Amino acid sequence: MAVYTIVDTQELDALLKRYDIGELTSCKGIAEGVENSNYFIETNHNKYILTLFENRVNKDDLPFFFDLLDHLKKSGCPVPRFIADKEGIILQNVANKPACIIEFLSGVSIAKPTVDIAKSMGSILADMHIALKNYQGSRTNNMALSDWHHMADSCKEKDIQQIDSRLYKSIYDELSYLDKHWPHQLPQSVIHGDLFPDNILLRDSAITGVIDFYFAATDIRDYDIAVTHAAWCFNSKDQMFDAAISDALLKTYDAKLPLNDESIKHFSTLLRGAALRFTLSRTVDWINTPADALVTKKNPLTFLQILEFYQDDTNINHILNFKG
Image (tube, rainbow, N blue to C red):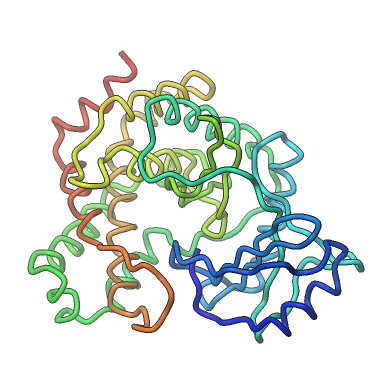
């Protein structure tokens, strides 16, 4: 979440008149994240999130996201619903951007998960994957391996080198490795694709919500576990690997939706892909985010360190010990 587009009070009041959700009492921009413009809005009835979809989100994809969350909600997964206006319309236009109002789920986001939270996350991720096994909706993943090449090529070598002298070579060496080893044959389904700790909501140590599905797409299901592992299992301060968090996440997932031998065989490649994906997206954002945008830029070197960890077979063997 972030704020790139400013919405004035007059336009927000006009938007809310199309809904039966009360009158505006407060509005505040949300700076976290990098994808869309987001506002926390409160009315005299309830609390909501207003999202304006910026250039990275294709307007044509929005019906997929609406239907996906409706499916997960009906399956009992803790996700927010999109709010329709009085005419049953979800998609709006605000400040010349496609926009929607989303149910506010109570709870707070976290920076560092505990073992118990990781256990809950593993279980909920398995529940979502089970719910999506027979889901008919689909969306091409625009953050897949082929797109990582485009992302890398979109940045000038000198701009990447200014971030860190080893970053350019590391990116292209890893792309070459993944081109040769990516396990395209593994089962696919719709995945979340961006399940960081700050994309869950927590209340009284219980997960009350999973949010921010705008990277959701059809891809290798096990890759979603790898993304979550890369996002959860390293200390945010010094990037040290947290084996207890890793074991908790993977064991509870595996208890509900077991990883078979083929999944285990290719898991290291998926982990490396997850780390490279975020190294690349953060590199692109670091170089291209406007200086005046109300957004917290994230350092790509964080995930370069994680990638280097996953490149060590000894570390991978420790991770896979969760199977006993």
